[in-house]
Length: 215
Image (tube, rainbow, N blue to C red; front, side, top):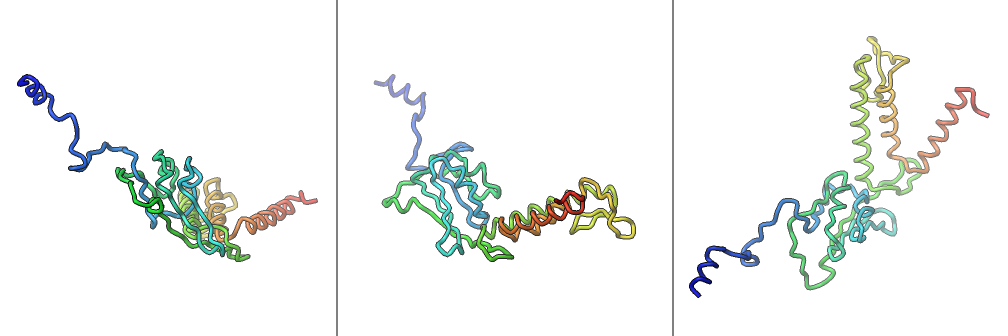
């Protein structure tokens, strides 16, 4: 018996103190997904990527708001939502105690306003998603304009390359042209897909006419 206690003392504790003491979890532990409502743009990428459909996006009947919701009872803690989120609005935490007395307590949700088309007034996307896309495109246009600066001064808005007197050069270069196209595309963000298609068709017809290719 004395030898047994001696071996036990030499081996040390074989178990952890949890739940009497907090459990020390390793980095990268995949626990409960934590959703940052402020950072979320309601783009729906996480809902599309979620294998068990634990995350959902539902549009209100009047199409004025879109609701993001998650059911932790369905979550398999795979981390796909964290991987695809463009704004890092959802992260897997180290929280694992998800026992509840009612299944409804496993669900969380929040809603976001839906933007309407500046032309036809039709609801078409989350307002925060539209704002995010516009900012990303303007940043890209600014980067393209900076790259084109080697060819001359650059208009900060259009991305066009300017001469010494401020006039637009005919050959603005690939970087300047790309920046100009991005800036123009950012302006169209406030339009729904149908209105943008109409504009694209008009632009294509105009270019074809200018090149003498219109029939």
